[in-house]
View 1 (cartoon, rainbow, N blue to C red):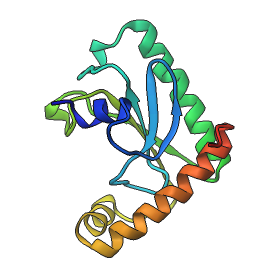
View 2 (view 1 turned 30 degrees about the vertical axis):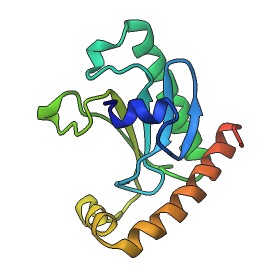
View 3 (view 1 turned 90 degrees about the vertical axis):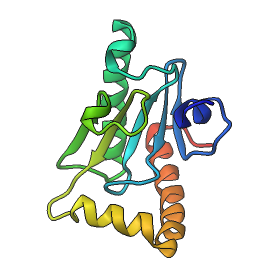
View 4 (view 1 turned 60 degrees about the vertical axis):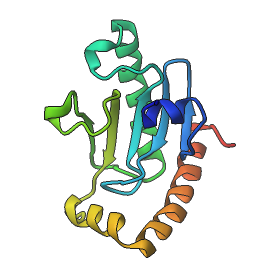
Length: 148
């Protein structure tokens, strides 16, 4: 059975896709820490950063810079963006498939735990989240020049 990111990359599971290229897919996190929480996911099943070639790792950083610029252009994370890779199970990596988080921040944002609890356990919160994710995806696609 494929991992969830392999299934999304192959088009077998839905996602709020923002960008695709030969090495990566970019999508919104379904359990976001903050609005417009973006994931850059390796197309190849590579559990760890070291499993990617040096050239692909370089392209990952270049794509992260492009996505950070799009986030800021769309009004997210103007004062700061966390870039996070959880590299291995002991680092809190829940899906063993390389992905980089871009988490836009702003002064006074809600504690991440409270946000995650609300989204995960309240059905109304999940429905509202899907509407919000769709709007964020459209806004970010426009910022990337990749409107669908």
